[in-house]
Length: 416
Ligand code: PLP
Image (tube, rainbow, N blue to C red; front, side, top):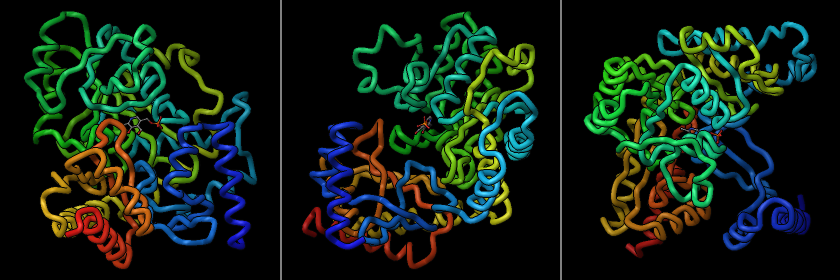
């Protein structure tokens, strides 16, 4: 694109965004001078003038990088054969994708229902819990499970619920990481409960619970006959340097949700996994839950190939090694600015949070990083935290780029 053509394309996009998608987004994009994103490859995203950006954002989706060749080839092959199914016959890809996903899932989970987005997968979790006699849902403060009405009711942030309360199902909240508080809540009411939480709260600000917490939660659920639903939409499939956050503590949930990385960064897909016992209601009545597009062949092929690539390329181990090297390096790069900028850098695997001393500084830092051509993520339930969720395919020149950008941004903001 010529510079004039690029400028014009951006103007048209911002006007259309303002008039037909979201005025607020358009205004922010305009104020910050955000470019268009037009193509991507590996760890890089390119703007309309073909400038590369290092992608350490993407809300946790791109663990394999952008357009991983195996996933793109598999999806392109399916696109050329049979992209969407009639549902009148037997579509084989959804069945083999479910088998592949179960082959890497925590023991005990046997059935899979594919959805199109994370929030849908959480909705089915809540529905299955209810159908299994759980009349109470207990979630953790600061947690994030999506923004449709059911999953929003379990999302521990009032900002997104204002004015909607009468529509939201009742959910009880307990402090995240506090097993005693959960015990008190379970003990306080004899009705059967389902406990829904993330192993690490991602949108909550990369909050890592005390060691042993998830195991204690599992034991409490056992003691009080509660179901345990673990939301691994952001933490699962390698993001934490393990297949699942559950694996770290040898926990077997009754229900598990996954999404994001499952797409391979190519076709949106999420899933609800359940034990045979919990899933029985769906086995008895196959129409208890259904979705026109859920488990479509393109998504199924993307999901199965993504898992094969994670396994073949040992990306989980890579995420773990890279994460443990990056964490101190990131702290080191930010240290130059002194303590007035950053409160803490924390993370597990390739889910890394930088907590700033104020929301304003976090926002300024994110925009300053854009000038260094590094993409990071805002954190929905914790605006003082900027997240880095880089791909596991990061090379050493990318790491140098990231560390230089962090250091320069920190120094620019503090004048250190
Ligand atoms: N659950 C968790 C833990 C998430 O992080 C997210 C999204 O960030 C969701 C659910 C909702 O997923 P989606 O945005 O695909 O609906």
